[in-house]
Image (cartoon, rainbow, N blue to C red):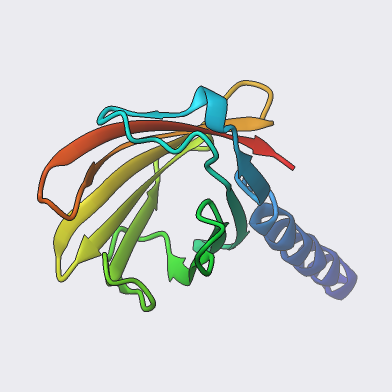
Length: 158
């Protein structure tokens, strides 16, 4: 008599788990709103072209971005999969940093660190804005010259 009930509960839990994985409000494709974005050092490119794709499975993020601002060079691609457990995870493909650490700060915020051999190069808070169609990425980045600057970038859901 309990077998059908156990099967229904098990299927419900499995369905709930899959629904939760796709419930992250940052899931999807985002494009930078360059006119609204800025860097405190005044060097924000007016023609900034950056698209970010994020997908989530449980506590894991798949992050893929393409920055093709400089049309004379190959696009800069960031591609990694990491747990959102605040542990530095290896990252390849960038001379600037070689580790990422991420964590959720609640349903509408997450924190991302980009590190070079354990030294924080970029620290950012992703903040989903009301309505869920836009997020702000605010942070501090250390430049190649060792000087830090703040930034605020806005992204729109595509």
